[in-house]
Length: 464
Image (cartoon, rainbow, N blue to C red; front, side):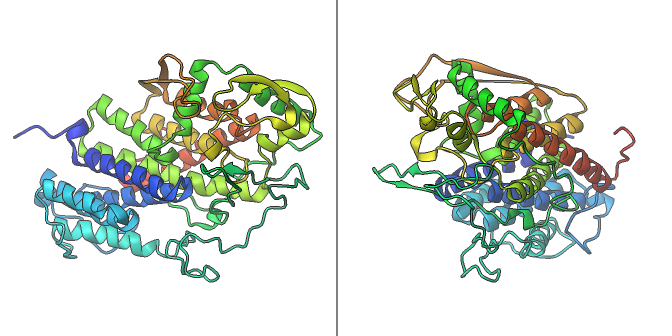
């Protein structure tokens, strides 16, 4: 009997790699849209998980109804690989449709026929196709407005059907506690202020979480409070003292061109775990499903908090607190650190993507990173991670002012999540409250989803 493929050789790992390619291409095509990306990845890995459960002794699917567990003599690795591949192929082709040729080529390379649309629940091809079909059908009207068919969408996919309007506009800040859109450079000498990204996302049906506001945090600190004054000061001081390591961390977690956003970033980290621990197909299917369920639900819960509090970002808060005071701050690409008035302060970002276009509290990076880190810790039974990356500080932000390469070390999952969170404060996108409460929110979701996940795979959760 030949050894089972492990690490990068298992089929689940290979499809996860393809999913990341699709994510990067989708980002290049549609600009970063982390909420939408997290749903795509969540549902792709749910499709694969559901197909896989029919070949497992005790696992149960999320959406694949009325398809029997396969008899023991059919629970072979080969059948699992076929079922999982068809599920991945169909789900990827639905959500990342502009890359369907890449997915088709992967099927052909695996010796599978992409045109096989069988829905026979006794064959692995049929089970894979059914798994994806049932996920796609079940999530067709889940609040995401994927097809632009929610009333008031004018046929535009992902159009805001809630009619959200910020209280402030890019030119006037009426209420300093609330979010203010900001002008970006369009890269052609002009400027524009992007609207809020998917301001209805809190209405999307979660995957394993019971409701969007299940773990909603209490309110952020308001203007006039000592806490806010201190936290705005911290943002200014962190930026004034950015080291090359800090710059590299801000950029690595911010994720530039070929970005896969937070849901994809943590899928990459999960793949690092698969390589490190030489996972089988079964282990990878379960791990990716758990991690991406946390990312998907994390964004829904995070947006619940963002839209409920509609809270200001440091970009506006620093201008308010440091009006006409001279501070040390980053002057922009090619300028480095300079002395400036507080109202000229800006985040450590390129002009074309100055600051995420949606309210601040809580931080999406912190929520997803805190959650996915906790999910990987629970899944592996250990906090140890041990990955490192070498980066050129400033590569994405000040390309004419590059430093020497630095190495970032990620010793534990928890520390990696915390580094992602604090990087958003260093970059000037968030105050500490956004970060701390985001990390907490993510961890609460991860623990809840882990219990649900254990029920799905037929394990007890006594060890929690």
